[in-house]
Image 1: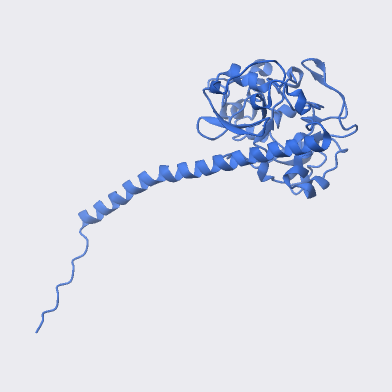
Image 2 (image 1 turned 180 degrees about the horizontal axis):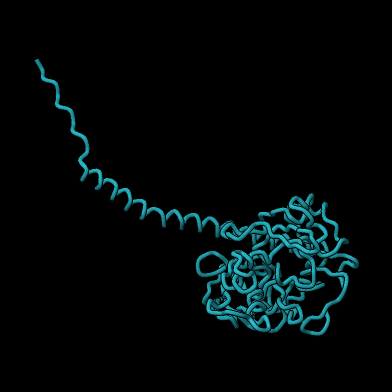
Length: 322
């Protein structure tokens, strides 16, 4: 008679520990790979968002014979050259990203906006039109709040946040320093023929890293995410550099120095709002005025960034420089 086979013994403690160690090593090897795949996907989605913004701006230019104003104000205001131009649309407050809504398949949202009610008239309440989160305006890698708030006179106004901003020139903030050498600025009406430096050598849109711990500490009283609150695609006041007009006064991803304890004269704050950046690795995406999207690294010299920010200064730039 055939004997019954002996049953297999259970794992010993040492074998179990070896298996756990192997699993831990595999996880350690796989996790960075998974993170890299996710970041690559986010960066591609970000690039596509910027491509859509470029196409929207060209569609607007085709329909209106000029690019949308960086912000339309029903009055003039002080800028670096003295005074801004008068309104493109008299009597209206309109941000760059409000103007582009119909061209990114957001006509219904655009129709809900009232452009005669002031700088944040469309933002009263968490479900107000201006509070809408528009995914095309947000980079997937941006971890800052997707909705921002502003309280004034006992009322809280809500805004959908934005990662991306238009190119106003080298300086986008503070308003009295805005040089208006780019494509989008206060009451601007730039045409494609006005980009004489070449559309392939001129920024149209870029992104901003909305995280800055030093800013949070100094200007937010230590409130984490205070810098990220300085965004809102529907703001339409005379400080658009806070929200969606950037600049190139420092290198990509420059942040306020960590050793700062104060900021006399708002010097560092003014620079921080005129900087491109992202939460991608070592660089940021840009949409150029020819519609192409390119990734520029943090090592691109600030002088090159400034030359790419002007539309008609006559610089000759070789693509190998960036």
